[in-house]
Length: 317
Image (tube, rainbow, N blue to C red; front, side, top):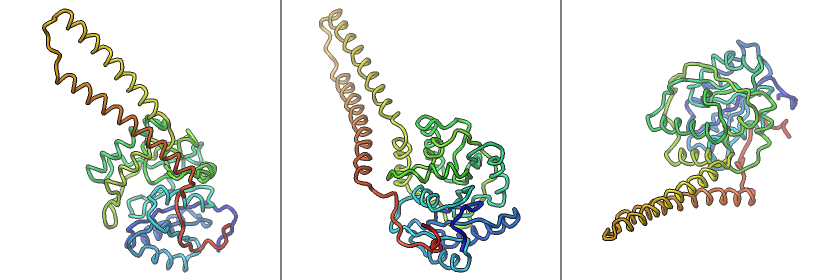
């Protein structure tokens, strides 16, 4: 077994529907660290209650290789929960997030971690145009814009799932106990020394994206409300603008009535104003409700995840 002391590098892999690919990903990590002469490392694979047999594959690998550690969730908690669970159980001076489908160019790991030895705290791979569906591209673009506005992400930094960061950043992520983990928010609140490393994304080894529309919407909502109160401030500004517009329209209506006494007040304009203001009010109430709901879930200590089984963690507290 590996020591309970710090190791040089931790690889964290959230797993879902990757029974046929995770073995190849782990083998590539082994080959890469061998080329880099890194002997003291660990691979933490987190099964997010996958419906296939990925955990059985992980158990078999971990029983043969003390570097490989496996965690199985009791239900599906999402990719970000898997990532934070891996961080909380890691010991690496450098932590690396990567996908389980083989798209991440692990063979270029040396290029990814190089900035961490040159003053940067977080290095994120930038793929340029990602190899994903049109719908997923729209979702990624929306998330990038939301992150720019809400968590002060630099506009020249592109987010991705293949990244490396130093231990103090990992410790800050691990300290987070809220029920709605959002890795991007945790990274950018931990350090401003973030850089992109341009690499070429590879094709998936098998299968397609596991992000459904429901999961994408949940991620969008999380990006809006997890680490910022700016949506509430935006709602206040929107309310003020609507009130000013409403006041101007009221003044215009009164003046027109005085100038043209026979003018009939328009039914359509009245209904339009009611619909706009009504929609705005419901939107603002929805944002407030989301924050209140998250406060309620936090007070009730809703867990980030629940672990059903672990392998190769006998030496961990």
